[in-house]
Structure formats: C-alpha cells, structure tokens
Length: 196
Image (cartoon, rainbow, N blue to C red):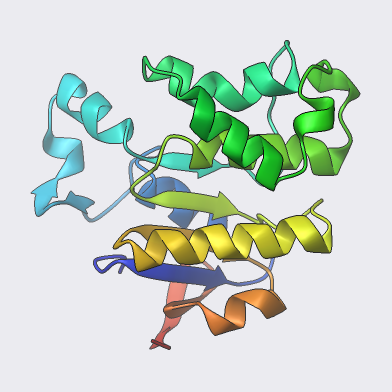
C-alpha cells in the first residue's frame, strides 16, 4: 500500500484502524496476518538485530505529545541522541522553524500542548526518517505551525521520501501536496486514490 514515495493520507473515523495501520507501517506492531515488506524483504522474518537497523530509519509521531523529563531542546534532540549523533545546526534550524527557540530551555512539563507537539515533530524531522509517520499531526498546532509541517512533509516527498499521515479529515493545506488518500473503515482500506 505504501510502496511508492510520496505523501499518503489515511482518513477514517475513530476506531477505524488508522493508528494500527500506521504502527504496522512504522514497524512498531506486527500484523496478525500478511507480511510487511521492506525493500522486498519480509521485515518480521528478519533477525531482531536486522529489524533494529531498519527501525532506526523510521520516525513515528503519536497523536498526543510524548515528552520525557528535561528541557524542550533536550526532548527535541532525543531522536538524534538515540541514533548516536546530534546535528546542532539541524536541531536549531527546526527549533526556529517551529517557533521553539524562546522555550528551548523550559522543562517539558511547562510547555503548552502546541509547543509539546512541535517538539515531537522536531524530534522526528531531525532524524531524516524514511518513512515519517504522523498520527493526527495537526492536533494542538496553530495555523502557522501546521503550514510549516505541510511544507516539511512536502519536502520529504519531493526528495523521494515517504510521509504517512493519519487524520479524521483532510487538512486543507495538505490537499495541494498529498499523493495518495487511503480511506479506512473497520480495519479495512475501502479505497486508495492516487492524486499525484
């Protein structure tokens, strides 16, 4: 279903299976049936070490921000730190893009919901994921940050990458850049439409 680069938007009501589909595509959940192919190889048939190497390329952003103790900047850098290298210039670039430079030293517990969501987006974007999976990414974001996110998702697709977006509805700014729309209901893809 997500075999080609581009922006895939998975639409459906609560309980339809959007999050489950994204977690399977992000290699977090093992499907109860079928297989997940990565570069033509069954991911779940690989050794745990081989799976870990592939998983490091993927970033998944939960619908509700998940932050750890520490500052906003420390949380934003966490993905790079886990992968062994923090690119300070790239981190600063995204902190500035998402309007977080004024709060980078604040403890994560003191951030607004919108700031916390922006930190989780920065954390994902700085690892240059392939693919980037976003569950309800526009929740908590103001219009400015939402437009910035659409620009960044579009850049990923333009660069030959893949972004997966699960949402209840098509965010208006996404309409101009989305490649495919997958409508899901009761755990089944009802339709897949290619837009670009």
